[in-house]
Every structure is written in C-alpha cells, then in structure tokens.
Amino acid sequence: MSPATSSKKIGILTSGGDCPGLNAVIRAVIKCATKRGWEVYGIPYGTQGLISLEQGSCGIQDLRLRDHGFDIPGRLHGVDVLQFLSGSILGALNKGDPSDPLIAEEILEGYRLLGLDALIALGGDGSLDIIDDLARQGGWNWIAIPKTIDNDVPYTERSLGFDTAVGTVTRALYDLTFTAASHSRIIVVQVMGRDAGHLALQSGIAGGADVILIPELTPKLNDRILDGICQQIVHLRQCDRQFALVVIAEGVRNQAGDKEKYIGDLLAEQIQRHGTQLCQTGQPEFCYLKSLETRATTLGHIQRSSPPSSFDRLIAAAFGRKAVDLIAEQTYQQLVIWAQGQVDSKPLEAVMPLIKARHQAHVCTSPVTPSNPWVQTARDLDIYLGDPLAVGNADS
Ligand code: F6P
Image 1 (spheres, protein in one colour):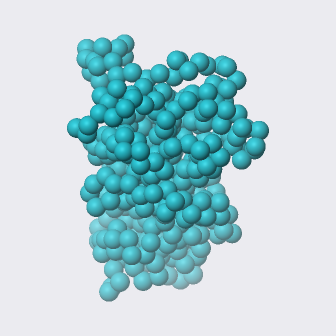
Image 2 (image 1 turned 30 degrees about the vertical axis):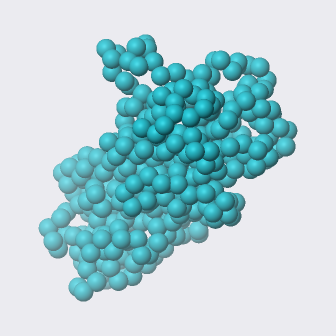
C-alpha cells in the first residue's frame, strides 16, 4: 500500500452512457481513498449533479460516499454487491450541453461549492472532451478513467466495460446459433459500438460468426458486399453448414451512406432479395438462397448491463486504485490507461488534442485499423469481412 498523504476531499462522477464495471471503480476509489483518510463525494448524474448542488436541490453531505465495510443495507449477509452490479450507483446521463456558457457557469459554481482537491471522472471520448473544457475553465485537478463498451478511447488498449460487452454479445451469438441451425436460417445480429467495430469484430470471432461487417472495413452496404455475403453463405453450404450468423456493427451505413437505426433488419431483407436476384440472373448456385429465411436481432442495451466480467472487475480495481495514487502524488490531468497488460497513465495534454479533434469532427476516436490483429485472425478463420478477396478463403 502506498503511504498515507495529507487529508483530501475528492469527487467521483460517471459521465455519458453507463457500462459494466462503473460501480467496481467507485468501490475501489472509496476503499483506496478512505484508507488514506480522505473524504469521497459521489456526484450524481455526471456534471448535472454539480448543477443540482449549485441550485440547492442537493446538499454536499448528501453526496458523501463512505466505506462501510460489509455493514450497509444492500450488502446481503456481508456480500459486497457494489463490485458485481452493472449500471452506476451515481446515475448516468448523456444529455446536457455544457458548451452553453450559462450551464457551464452553474457546473463550475457547483464544483466550487463542493470544494474538492481533485475529481475522478469516468467517461468516453465525448465526456472527456466536455470535462476537459470545464476543468480548464474551473482550474480543476482531475483524473480521467476510460469507460465504454465501444472500446474507442485512444491510448488505452481497453476501456472499462468492453470485455463484459464482448462476453454478452458472444453469449447471444451462442444462443442464436441453435435456433439458426434448427431452422436453417440466416440470422443477422446488430451490435452496438457507435462508429467503432471493436465490439462486433471481437465478439463476432468469439461467437462463431460467418460474416462480420464493421464500419472501418464496410463503411456502407452495397451490391459488392451483398455479393460477398451471398457467396459466403453458398460456400458454407458446400461445407455442410446450412445456416449463417451475420454480425453487423451499428455504425455500418445503408447504400446511400446514411445511418439506419435498424441496419441489421435492412441487411436481412437485402440478403434475401439479393440472393433471389443472383439466382434470377442465371447463377444457379445462388438459388439455394431463395429458400433460406433471414431474421434480424438487434441486441440493444443488454450489451451494457451484464454483471462486469472478472477482467472488467480487475481493471476497475486497478483503474480506481491508480487514480487515487495519482491524486496522492499530485500528478493531475492524467488519463488512466491499460497498456501491455498493466495499468498506467498518460498526461491529458498529450491525449486530448486527438480525442477532441476526432470527437468534434464526429469521427471515431479509435477505430479498428487494418493492422488490428483481430482483422487478420478473422480473415484466417474464413470470416467474411466485406473484403473483395476474402470469401471462404482467399485461395479458393
Ligand atoms: O457509447 C456506448 C453506446 O452504448 C453505443 O454503443 C451506442 O450507440 C450508444 O451508446 C447508445 O446510446 P443511448 O444509451 O443513448 O441509446
């Protein structure tokens, strides 16, 4: 354990969408900070909680978080539930516009009232961008912890919540496999990730998908992609697989290049129609597709709510502890990261320019790159990724 330092008052907030593991970080922060004799304040609903404080709808002492050992209601027979629960006990909010100077002023005033020595903020790229601006205006000492099932925060190999979401999607693919196989159907599964394909790619590989479409490799659906999917399905049949699992990341766009809320449903219809067209243009091997049914499943928010995996609990513990250690050393304005199998940190001044530029340009802050090892792994496992060459096997 690191040596105790002078008493501090620190705050913690969870900003943006929730993800598994937030409560485990909060728990780790409470434990590590309490051990040092510090006070911890949980700010509800992200920066909105600071507005509530400024407006007097909550008091400072209402926000105090304590390490109660195993002795508080909700800790059934000594079970420390906080570590296991997904969601955020502080509440999460991905609305509000602190770029409005009046709102920003309320937030800054709430922070002044709270009188913190430092703030730990858990957020994805958007939240980090917003809080960084506020921190500059208010002169806050703060530590950022990356969280998002999209795994698209740059400079960290992992963001909190991603591993659990990969497990959730992988389980869903397993569950869908048997109904797809029984009915010889093509099941299209729409996976979250915003503009990033990490979740679809990794869970697709782990869940045995035959096709994985991610925005980095398949920005939009077109006839070439549909040809490739139909060829893959025909190829599978030649290998005695009568069904197919097609994973599509929500960031893939329609043929016109527009976002679709239910891109998976659209793809399922298009596969059926395209297969029929290929058959009608005198390519008999595709006529098999005419009799195949397609169905689509949009996994939605279940991807955010499973109990955190052991890996997410581990990085939650490591991230929370690291954030407290950094504050103890007075090394502020840091992004806590996971790099080469361990926790570390990077100065925000080095990471924020890229995060801000990409977030403000509405482009993915940390996309799947062509050299991502999972891309090559998927190709080598004969998963169709929308590449012109990769149907079945590049050699066939
Ligand atoms: O960023 C996390 C995420 O779950 C994305 O994968 C998804 O597009 C989005 O949030 C959904 O946001 P909301 O909860 O506002 O529907």
